[in-house]
Length: 227
Image (cartoon, rainbow, N blue to C red; front, side, top):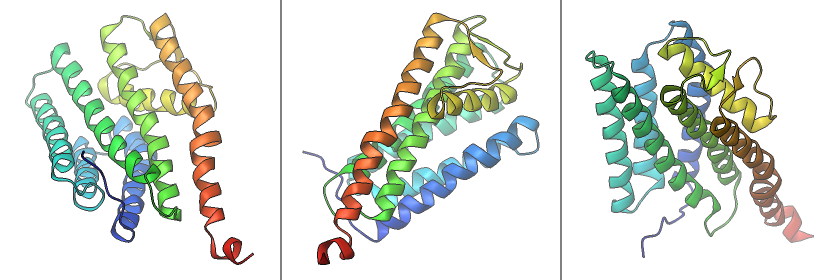
């Protein structure tokens, strides 16, 4: 059976590095890319950092590394195809679908490592935070896909790929954290169902999985053991 083995030290650093890249993508690069101040190439470079960190530090099994590598290469090829001028809607849908697959692959590996057996450290709690933010990224991709496939799935969404990327990420973060999506509203019933599911995950995740890790970390702390 294939397992992802937890090894302190290197994996700790990997979690910190992934979280730093995630924060940069979600809260810095995405808004800048929406306004045109940042290049799409920067997003791909950051995604390469995610893939490399996951393969070399966290995912130690060859099959898992191969899965991350294949997901990233497929995402990169889809982006290259996009830049070469293939702007047909089917190409855009494939690109988003491959990106979702990459995010799910990395999130799964991080989740297994963060919630697997072993001592709970601060960095493993950061791994749970990474998984939480990946929920927002995956759902943002799903919203972008539904916006392309379903006509008038949203209201208040600015036109254009750049604006939709930032708008769907904003909508996803709002659904995940507070259930509020601001001026962007889901109109189609299926999109509303997706938003409701993300809101439920956003409410349950910190109260169950993340809280559980924090409690285990506190229980294993030197002060608690001495008492």
